Image (spheres, rainbow, N blue to C red):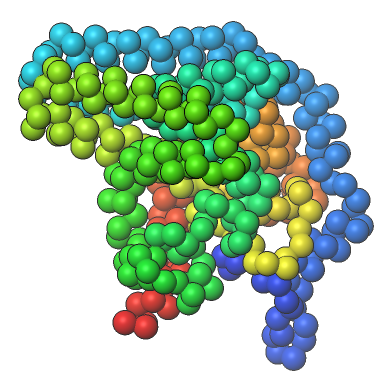
Length: 368
């Protein structure tokens, strides 16, 4: 199966570059010219996808998938209650980390209306899965994720590449302050250790977001978040001794964070960053900044279909089981237009992401 690499540079510059006294065409200029020549390239792809029937809902698939996750969660809780105050609970913690990761993927699909076409059932399902079961604000995450989809890998507009702790471009490295300046020097080595805190970070960010004007239902979401943690910590400290309860939290939340990071990091990290002023049409903006991950059924299950990241970004409401067929159509269409289309394996995608982190952190290491 042929793989394509997207660009040799990991940024999309805003100005042309000169090479040997000749003007060299930049991705910005190429995209702009193609957009003028082809008109709405995305509309043609959308027509092909629609004619293939790939946007219709798949209720049976989601019934089976969500039912399996619910059974796994119930089994984990039952095992926790049966084992009692035992160090074997750390195995339960590890298993529940995987279950929580699958719950996170379920909340993601609900937020994109892949499960239900109507807004209300999607929101109810999202609140139950995200706030009640995961301890993460559905409203806050959905707002953040929507902005990411609109401008993936945009230095100023994508919240997922904001330089809060890590830096994602050399420009950000040169301007970094505070924790990002310190951590950015060694961020490739620290990436996976930092992911162990991602689950807790999502919960803390959710509580902080309750005060923001953008939150539509702060009281409801706050109540559901509090209920989650009362049950979560109450159950742990009622059944386990304090030391074992804290160890359970460390294993559960740590592996949960690593799982989430392993699912989301391969999709965009190490792909081109878009600078302010760069103009790309919708099709190219989504394809050039995204990476698909090959690996078959196991990778599909592990990543919940997000390994088809290009197709997911082009058609966010497309149900997960349709993404594989959409990938074939999209890759062929991109080949017709001469648009680079990136696919790689799971381990290779992580290597590319870590190499990118190391490369963009170089200005900080040189600064000492």
